[in-house]
Image (spheres, one colour):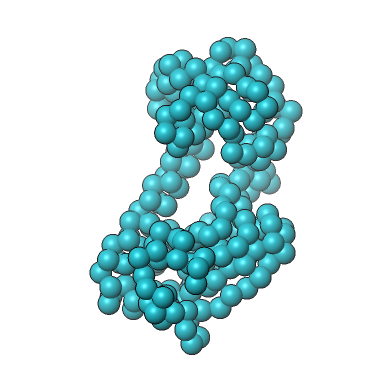
Length: 224
C-alpha cells in the first residue's frame, strides 16, 4: 500500500480506496529477476501495471534488428498506462527488468468502474495518460531527427528543462545507455560527444556536464 500511495495517480486515495482496487481477483503481484521480460511487444494489455520495486527499461527493435531504448523507469511508477485504455490495446515495446522487480497488475475493468465512482481519480487518470502520450509523441519526433548530433543536442536541451533550466547537472545515464537511446555504438557516440565538446556546446567532467545553453538553443531551434 505504501508504494502505491507514492504514485501521483493514487496519492490522494484513502487506504480503503486503494484496498478496493486490490481486492478479490482484481489484482495480482508478480516478482521478476533482472533481465526478465515483463511484457513483450505485440501483447494485449488487460491490466494497469504498477512497478512497486525495482527498475525496468522499454525498448523496441527496428527492421535491421537494432535495439532502441525508449525509456528507463524506476519504482514506484506505472507502466504503459498510455496503451491500457486504448481500443487497440497492443503493447508496442518490450518491457524488461534491469533489476530484481515486483509488479502489481490491476484489472482495467476495475479501474474503469472505480473511475466512474470517483471523478477526481478519473481526471487524474486522464491527465497521466495525456502526459504519457505527449512524452511518446516527443519521442517519435525525436526519432525523425536525421543526425545523431541533432538527437544529442535535443536530448541535452530536454535535460536542461528537466533540471529547472540549470546549465550544470549530472547526466542521469551512462554512455552505454545513451548509445542504446540513440541507436548507435558506444565508440561512435563517444566520438560525436567529443566533437560536440570541441565545438563548445558543453564541457564534461565525468558524468557532470555544463551546457553552453545559448549555442545549444540556437542550434536546436534551427531544426525544431
